[in-house]
Image (cartoon, rainbow, N blue to C red; front, side, top):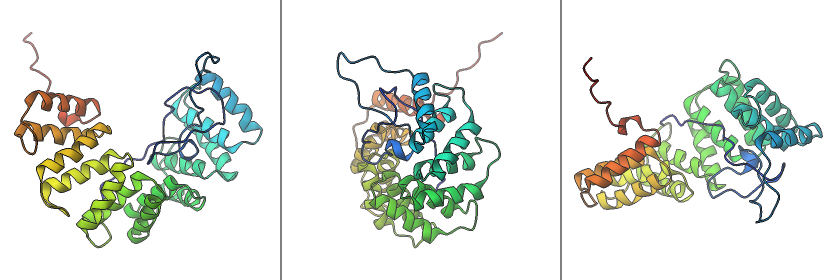
Length: 296
């Protein structure tokens, strides 16, 4: 299975108050499962939104009062340097405090920091332990991240069969990323019997849940005829969905179809626009080559 990058969710919006949660879009983590707790948008005429620094101060007070979610959210802010100076070790301490209080999402956050080494040296053994605790606390992200460490053999022996079952469970619980990951294991035969047709509905579920990688992998399956009848036209549809969901590789593959006219109209202007979007989304291979340096 291709290595999946695991990231701590950043603070994306300012909020109107501390400790409130909002419902996340399908397939994404709710505030209590990875990001910062947020409140609904204020009505017209409502008081101005608080700043990130004010929010951090509010979380600090609520954390001291024993609110584990406030401690976890404050940890995310220290990890991201949002409203407070970036301090990975402070973030780890807050995650550990919240995790000890039974906050499964905080256990997952702590595992991520340890796996990536943001608070010091990488400690995959400890990361696996915290992901396991998070999963035991019913965190879908925790189970998914535990599965990835088991599949790759990080922090202990590889256990692909267990990893696949964890991914299927998280997928059935509504985590789109896990559906895509389970499909990848089946499509590649990565520690489980290879079954390309069985990977297709998992990719589709991931895509429909909002995971652009699931859309891309489904599109590429149609392009190669793996698990589904080969067809450039349906491939273009799914690659378009991938690009719409911010998947850089999906944009680049769709650009190539428009360049060649496979399954879509040949349109170099659209292909160029898709390459530019892929570049902006982080696909360096889609970025234009630097021009020749002027003569001295």
